[in-house]
Length: 173
Length: 173
Image 1 (spheres, one colour):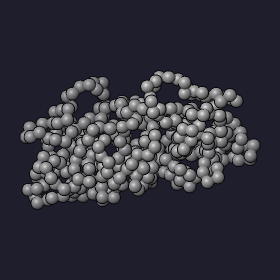
Image 2 (cartoon, one colour):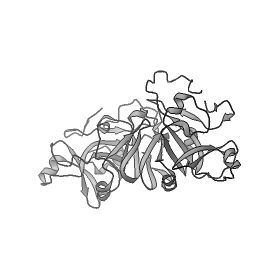
Image 3 (tube, rainbow over the protein chains, first blue to last red):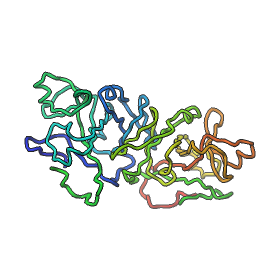
Image 4 (cartoon, rainbow over the protein chains, first blue to last red):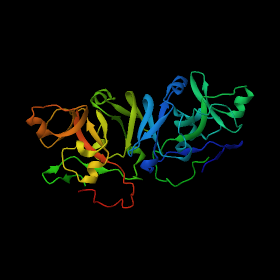
């Protein structure tokens, strides 16, 4: 599924659970820099190209923290500006997740090349206190905020510890 | 197969062809820094740990060039010192590869925590002119060389362009 209904309106950001043993074509794995705060989001390498037949990732500058994700569609199209922010729980999301989900760590994949708050139904990575959170475009516009740190493309949930029912679709609460 | 016979003796370094669409358990993917020359091999981050449920890779320092490999056994055991060197062809290997193979680009995975030339049948990454090559331990010992840049764990060949016969085992020439 690509959409989740939070009871209020349809959320347009895909929320995907990473599966243990998830198969990924070696040719479509995506490697993205991982950030913890606003400074890192601004500093992380903006462009990463793939080099040669082995898919060596060449970033425009060095970075310490990386994550490998399967080549999910919203991420595959990301040529420049891709960044991942890791959060200890899903309370940073502006929609109501169920309790389990809310207490899980998540990764938010954002596109820093799309910072302008455009579509009302878009979601944006924005500074929040000392950290970061995800906010709705319409909420930002109401506050007169026209720019975020990037458009949110995808939210990744961790693999289940007990990942027997990989084909189950009840991740969509 | 884990060994290749070069007509002279059994080579103990696995030579593996990366397969297009090769499936890798997300939990067993390995991310390693990629180097081009001796200076980079010395400078590349020595230790990369995996953090949290998403397998975020945290290197001890920033690096620009990375490669994702399936969790092949010799590489999975590599906690510290792992490094990958990319070569434009396989002429840097000290055994006779067939013609096609010799003209293919390869990746050499080495363990920098094992630099001492020990077993005669080991292979080592060593400086060679402005670049690097792979040399047999016994050849190094004959030259009085007791230390390389690292023990070679694995040689990776690129995916076939026409990768229809993924189950074929004729990679072993």
